[in-house]
Amino acid sequence: MKPYQNRIVVKVGTSTLTNELGKSDLRCFDRLACVLSDIQNMGYEVILVSSGAIAVGRNKLKMKTQPTSMRHKQAAAAVGQCSIMFLYDKFFGDYDKTIGQILLNAEDIEQEEKKDNLINTFDALLEMGVIPIVNENDSVSYTEIESNDRLFGDNDMLSSVVAVLCRASKLVIFSDIDGFYNCDPRLHPDAKLIEEIDKIDDEVYKLAGGAGSRRGTGGMRTKLQAAALATSQGIDTIITNGKNPAALYNIIEGVPVGTKFKAQ
Image (tube, rainbow, N blue to C red; front, side):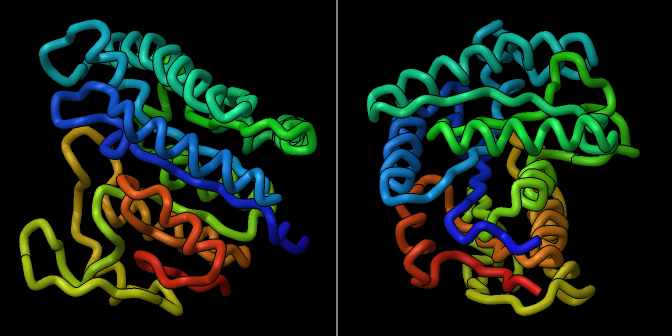
């Protein structure tokens, strides 16, 4: 089935939504809500996949260190998800937009009946002008947080799965760097941004490196895996810096921003 040309999935990560102290970056929430609301006003359907629940919950619960036990991670996720949705509701509300929360487990995708119901829910929300905000259901799901044998892995892959399910034409992954480089720009100041990649092969994976920022869970390799899935299903995927959500205007106008992985 062909993608809907006016349907976009945007993924924003923990490192974008929080500052170095682990607290919510309110200006980022506001800028993101403003741009996504404006893009919807232009006739696009927008789905937001948002991380950040555990990090925000940890701060709200005044945990001094990153939670390591399952029960503390899930407690932080439960508290943080409420805080994040409160902020989204407030800032999107400022732009007269309605949001809806969708929390997913792997079985929602793997079981055919549940998957069909999920697709119908997305379609209904979008038809009513609602902006769905998606996250993994970390407060109750063990496999999504801990298991190595999991469908999503992290929200980079979740955003790709959602883009495929919802037949989006574009997947935009907001990162804490400007795109995909020929080496890690945090370690190599002379690293060069690669503006367009036709095919994600072994050579591209070798350039990806390892872990991401200390507040998030996903590095560039997971973003490549997400891009590989999306592009294989005909979805253009763009990785760019989440601190500048206004880059979305350039993306929908076809102006080069960050790194574009071309749909296959």
